[in-house]
Length: 309
Image 1 (cartoon, rainbow, N blue to C red):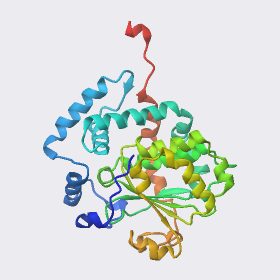
Image 2: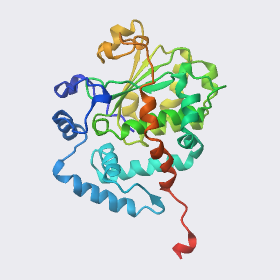
Image 3: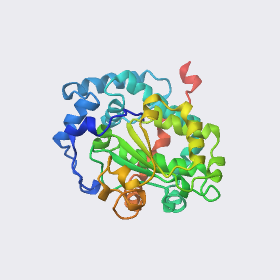
């Protein structure tokens, strides 16, 4: 995941509809096809050729096992703006992060436990509508996190599962994500529960280890302690990611209306819609139980030395 730092004004000629995610069809609208060409350099005439090139590059990676479906390769090619070499770098980072931080992904195999202990705390979720640029809206509320009840690994894994969920959507592969981070009540308790290595992992995920673009992050209600935390992450963030961060203060509605249609944003996040709730995500997450369990079959596998000989 990276950041293109593209503002709403620059993309005003490619406005999207506000259809509920649950009502979207498999048929991609023309506006998304246009956006795919303009934003991620997608040339319909070269799709099969670029997928074939990336498949050959992946096959040369020692010990790397990936899904065979073209959709997997298309997802990473969109993340790499249809440059096979860039897409390969994202694939490498994606699976290296999982190999090096396997404990953070144990929740993939413990979905119901993660739902019961973590998702029910309403710390994060994806809103039911896209924004005006067709992006999924990811909400993260770290101040609601109680490290005594929810370990960092569960917090991180739940966020990754939500991102994995939307990364399978072609519209999201094209348009990307925008984040709303409500930091109210974030304090020393939360800060002390995140090690420097874990902070670096968060930054790595948003920088280079996920195939969906994070365009902007809107930070709400930031206390001084959160600014300290952001300062800890800042050295590990790319310039585009840092430039895509917007801090909101004062009257949130006055500030947020410059970026979102307020009736689609929960009123506790500066909008006029119903209070934030992530229950709409639970059926989507449960529907992907097999997908998450299958992840152990992919990635960098141990190479049998006898086979090499």
